[in-house]
Amino acid sequence: MRRKSMAEKILGVVDGFIKENAAIWYPYKGFGKSFKKYRGSFYRSLIELKNRGYLEEIEINGERFLRTTSKGKLKLIKKRIFGEWDGFWRIIAFDIVEKKKKTRDLFRTKLRLLGCQPIQKSVWITPNDISADLEELLLILNIEENVDYFISKALTNEEKYLKIFDLKSTD
Image (cartoon, rainbow, N blue to C red; front, side, top):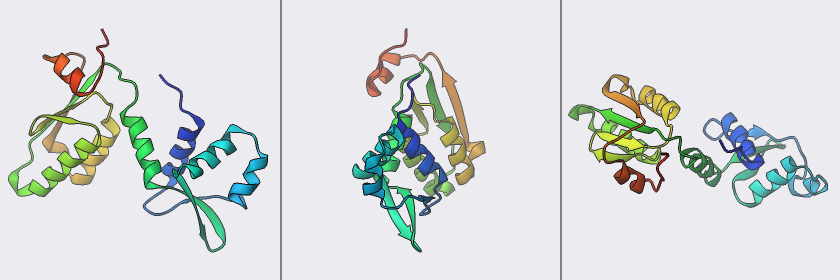
């Protein structure tokens, strides 16, 4: 398993503390200037993340805070979704009634954002471990009883799915 870079760790910590538009307290004065004297990877990573637009510094009532930008959140999602494949397929099957059409459409949109692809309208597949995200999504949408989640090592027509996700067989 690949080790996380310092930048990924920092983004994860900052993002982990954030709820909606909140931010993590950042007690250092003169963000850009004062960090130049430090040579540690932590400080270099903070400066790089800010310069690349993954973190932003904000000031509230004279105190400095760090907040993950939209670009930073996207970087975290991509790292989580496009990590190294473990050889298992995740299959999501659902049956959500027509009177919950908006919920069903929203669920499909979220599956696509999690890196899933449809096999059929109500059967989706991904090589990514989305267990935690899926569990949270099912609770939020209140559709736990309408969704089944399978993890499989083998599929028929696996070559087709390897091609869709641009993967190589683990055999």
